[in-house]
Amino acid sequence: MTASLDFLLPPGLSATEPPEARGMARDAVRLMVSRGDAEPGHHHFSDLPRLLEPGDLIVVNNSATLPAAVRLDRLAVHFSTARNDGTWLVELRRRTSKASEPYAGGEPGEWLPLPGRATLRLIERETPRLWRAELDRDVQAYLRVHGTPIRYSYVERDWPIEAYQTVFATVPGSAEMPSAARPFTAELVTALVARGVGIAPITLHTGVASPEKDEPPYAERYEVPASTAALVNLTRANGGRVVAAGTTVVRALETAAGADGLVSAAAGWTRHVVTPEGGVRAVTGLITGLHEPRSSHLLMLTAIAGRPALARAYEAALREGYLWHEFGDTHLILK
Image 1 (cartoon, rainbow, N blue to C red):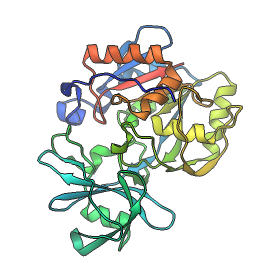
Image 2: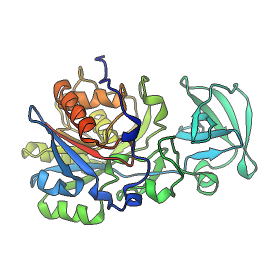
Image 3: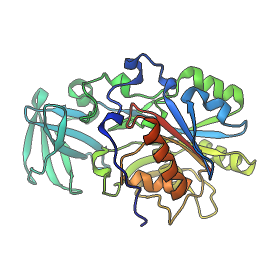
Image 4: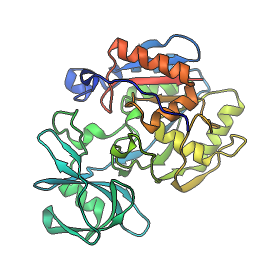
């Protein structure tokens, strides 16, 4: 597997709050555009309709974000992924003055008392950071009362769950926001449709992001509806571009794509990892945020943009002061 892009991310380039808290509209964040060998262009997200063509298709993730963090006195439990047997993958984290950090403790069979007289039983480790665990009640109902959105140390304070929902969020299940689509607004969607750009949904429930750095992604639940598969295939047959709004969408579509690039309706669990060696078959463009050094997401971006173009884009983003993470700026890659 080709090594992921590495660079130094200055602390001052982390978005510490939603753009609305900075007096901006959601779609006013910056948008860098990469097109092959051309130098990256610099726009705002509200420019998206004029950057795409009639007949293009944007595929979005309609997964809604759960308030997936439950805080104890010294620990926090991040609920990541629901399993078919009713158990969940969870991450234990030690609370700090700013947010939380990974916690290596825990033992199989250990019981953790949670707020609201709930009890979480650790069953076994699924990955070096994630436990398979069982809560003694319905998890989503419990989180609606006792949970808060997952927050990492670069975000300086808590924000309500509404700050972590996209305009497309209709199916609850993500531990963290599918953030590439956060800058979309109802008005921008209307402008895209008026331009002749189609929009179609998939569902992929994201797990916790913290294992991504230097670790491969784990299985996530997804669904590609038949109607979306048909629109993807029709768009490509007619010469339009299929632009994924987020790496989650790429993962779902590429899981559902055959060797010929045709997408079929599909649902279940995906362990598919997009790499430069494997490439992409269904997707011809990507809207994404800016990712941390060495993350697995950068391998996916390399598969779409190519390493020289991606390196050039990240050099420009660092030079121009783009903001990273879920409340930050965005990047449009067009093949």
